[in-house]
Structure formats: structure tokens, C-alpha cells
Length: 172
Image (cartoon, rainbow, N blue to C red):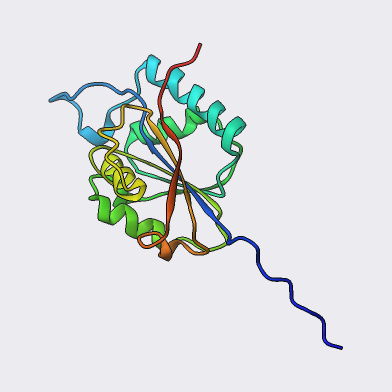
């Protein structure tokens, strides 16, 4: 008698974390935009968000980060355990469609993906995938989406759940 295969009771899900960089220096004629650094308050806030990610969601399997100094400093201050980090030049100044394309190119073995980027594209992508207008994410604003998909290329058509409202509250 052949063995019965167990049906899959629920599809595998992907978790996507979209994070805008922490509070940084203002625009200056003496410094290129890509070179702006985090302010002390931004460094503290990034650390708080990192603690939230680690204790509430877990360690991302991969992190995609813009090459701007402020996004890389945000990543550093998150203090997440070492993971598969990629500094992606295409994320700086990108449209939301470019961010989505980079997400779709990820390995299906990745379950939790963190993307650290900039407005307006990070907010536009968050609203598009959540299928509701979320407005402009504040600095260090985090959106956590659960995607009912087994591979990243299914994201545009997959049902998506906004697991929590955008998180940015500074906790003491």
C-alpha cells in the first residue's frame, strides 16, 4: 500500500520588513546627499528599532541596504546578529518599482527580508504592497508585511497582511 502524502495545510509565507533610514543631518552644500550621517537621536532610535525587530520578528535571513552613509549607519545601529547583508547601489535614489524588482530577485530560501532605504520610494512600496495608503514613513519607520507566497516573485499578486501599523515610536 503506497504511503499517503500529507497535504500542505498552509502555504509558506514570506516576511518583508521595509525600513526608512534613521534621522540624519540635513541637506548641505558642503556634503553630498549620499554622505549625510545619522544624528545622535537617529542612532538611538535605530538601536531601539533593532531591539524591536529582534524581539518581535526575529533575525532577517537577508538585509538589503542602500549605499548611503545614513542607511549603512542605521544598519550598524540596529545591532542585529550577523546575517546575509548586501549593500545595493541600485537602492539609492531608486523608484519603488526598482525596490520591488530587487526583492523579487531574492532566493526563495529567504523567509525574512529587511530592506533599508529612502523616501519616497520606501513609503510608496510599503503602501503598494499593503494595499492601503500608509503615508510617508518617518525616519526609522518600519513596515512589517506578511506575504502569502512561496517565492518572492509572487509578491505583486500575493495576498499581503500588514502585521502591525508602521512602527516608529521612540521607546524609552
